[in-house]
Image (cartoon, rainbow, N blue to C red):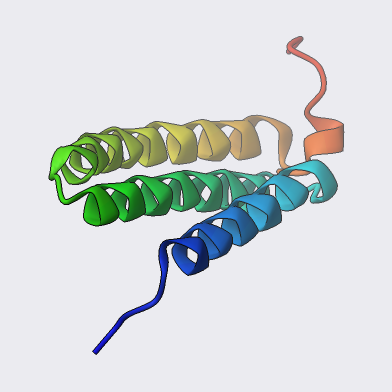
Length: 102
């Protein structure tokens, strides 16, 4: 049985990355922007795993393991910042969080 080709995996990865990028540019909610950034990260890891699989090496898989480890720490810090901003400003809309004062 022949599985999907390299181009199919890369097309899905590019589509996910484009959706995440579009979400970062368009959305105003900080949580949604944060989720779109994570979607872009997942798209890049999918591309790494794809290249690793089609080259027959484990290099991409090992790199993805470290990326996901850092992403877990990023999620914890990012959500803590969002919660702190909400407590201080009572909003998570990006347009209203444009000042570093107060």
